[in-house]
Length: 276
Image 1 (cartoon, rainbow, N blue to C red):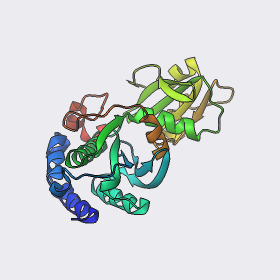
Image 2: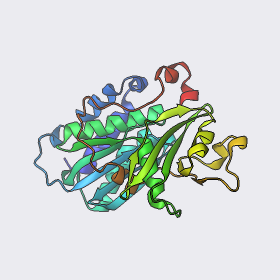
Image 3: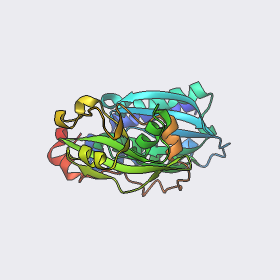
Image 4: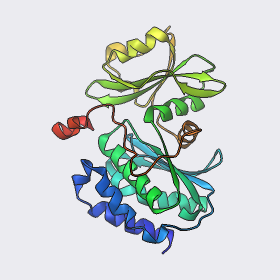
């Protein structure tokens, strides 16, 4: 069975699986992994990394080798559940690779959309289980901070770096980082805050990478002149940012890795449209 046939079979499983997996990702994980029996135990030449982010509205998958991104494909939240496996197949072909060449998977595990985080985690876990690939994860905020830092035109050297992500319902996921020796390192745990998150950032200052447009910011909180914060909007996780954020990450067990939510999943089941 070749890689394209594997992808086709996985896609069929993904589409046919009951939406009950939204409450329990293990169902999708097991369904996909058992659809790839021919890949288990294969002796492979481990050279490339598969990058997966479906936790944000603008998702992405890519193939990297070393610090070079060989191929990438964008994903939109509305079609992510049906498009991820096909996108993985496309980037493998574009990079001139097969799953046999992939030595590891880097997953953006959340926070973000509940459904998107589960889809990405289930697919990454299934591939890691069905192949000899290692699996590591980074948080969405780590990926946003690194992506903003690497693409910013501002000269960010050592001051605070903030990552902000729209949590919907007038709330935002926020985390503070700092730049040390050219690396973005966490300074505090990620939290979910109301509109006051922007004032909290202003109290400290620095560079703020926001994974949303400026229109998502409450009007009274929008940036103005003479601020001590350099705001950068529409910063979504890039393959280079995901790759950089994964440096030094430890391999995880595909059976125990879980998406990161920061908010109770009960919010999804009680108010599904509001939580997404």
